[in-house]
Image (tube, rainbow, N blue to C red; front, side, top):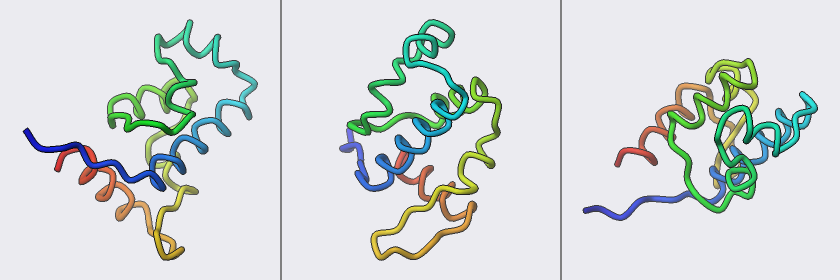
Amino acid sequence: MSKQRVNSILVSNIANHIKQLREDKGISQEVFYIDTDIHIGRIESGKGNITVSTLSAICDYLGITLSDFFKDLWYSSDKNFLNIEQLIQLWAKLCYD
């Protein structure tokens, strides 16, 4: 069994983006958990990977598409911006390689 890859910068950026979207909608972590059975506090801490399926469920609850989620999100170790296709490819690589 291969070791799971974790890119802490990417995970942190995704966690922060989820938190910002949730707070913008005025949804508490407790309400989020009650409605979705997803422990959003653990995800927002950025201490572990989440699956694409979990991210999709989060986006559904927040009323946005995965595409919209990644639109403003960026990742790069050298501070260059990546487009949505590059972000999705990177996410898939991290999850499935």
